[in-house]
Image (tube, rainbow, N blue to C red; front, side, top):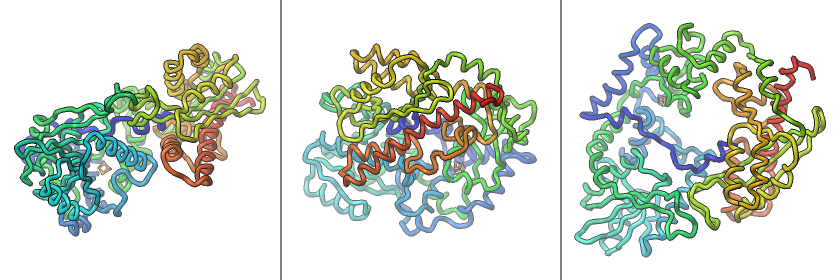
Length: 559
Ligand code: SF4
């Protein structure tokens, strides 16, 4: 599924524009981003009223986070970057249990950390003879760093410095002439990003205040490199850009400290960023259900959601008839109002016309990792490792199941492609959900010219159920999600994903990562492989169930 395919892909945090525009004092930052916006929303039922209410009710209100006090209020770059995402996040993070971390303990977080660790280790191999300051205890790390520098170490990994309540642990420091050190920050991304530059600016600020002069740069992943290249990193100078941001870092760190010790959490308004925030319920108690964040955002939909939020409209029931919405959003609103699904059976029947039996319901699992392992592989190449296919020979015939899983180290792509050609050749449509399966088939065809014709024939038979569903169906229980996991319980209730050990594409990629990179007991290996098989089988079975339910609707409910 696409979620799995995105695992490990470059990207992630994007620094909001309002931050980059920021200038002047911490006070002007507060007014511009918080007071200004809230003020603009003032009025009955407005976001401002909402903000005031949430300040009273928020669990983070009342007293500053105690753990932060105990730690002597040392800030890290992470907390500053979280502040840029939302001024409330540093407080929530500070209250979190130790070990939680911003990535949480979920599959995405574990995968992120494991890959970050591997990438860091890979980068260190390019600087032989380095001293690794290998302790999470910051005080111990600082004294080890001091000792290593005094004893003449030429290269330091994960050294520790502190100044002005800011802590820094630069990935790599290389001693140069005349007391200057080369600083490299290792990043999984492939392009320079604003948050990377701020990260380096924090390091520059702290190190230079500690008496260490630095020449900073970024080690980015080079998408054009292959396993055979001497390096997978691209070295990018960023001294000027980082130094330009040092005053901003100083302002931000002061502002974060102020927020952490303030009796009340900062005033904020409900925005896009809140939609997927883990603190949404804690931060906005009493938010109506459904609300405007539940509106579908694709195809220009976000713009309309932003407009509604700016006008202080929160509940779907409060959206006025003159509000600008996409067609799908209008359907959502109608369905929410009536509490009933909207089915355009005629449209769906028309969209289904190209389908030909035997129908094959196909689902892939695939990963993108920054470190290439196989001959000719680039960073972030798509690596499909599993597929499942349910076959319906003729309408109403019992389903036949075929599957493939690569559950060991080594390149899965050739075996996977051959099994695919063997099992999916012949006539009939291949039903998929989203454009992801097409992307996988194209990648395999480009990789194996001798299989390309057969793979492209499969590709030519693809039928994407998702756009057909979006155009002809909506149920209020779907909210903003048309994922197969949301659609299945609505259209075809029954045993679903809840009973499975692996519940989404990212968990599947994490399981695959463990199978190929960890030394596991045989029993655990078998259990993980079996969980993966069950998950992918569920995906293709769900696809059939959803199609069957909609086809029934298209026939006017006839079985
Ligand atoms: S829910 Fe919104 S305002 Fe609250 S912490 Fe998350 S992003 Fe910030």
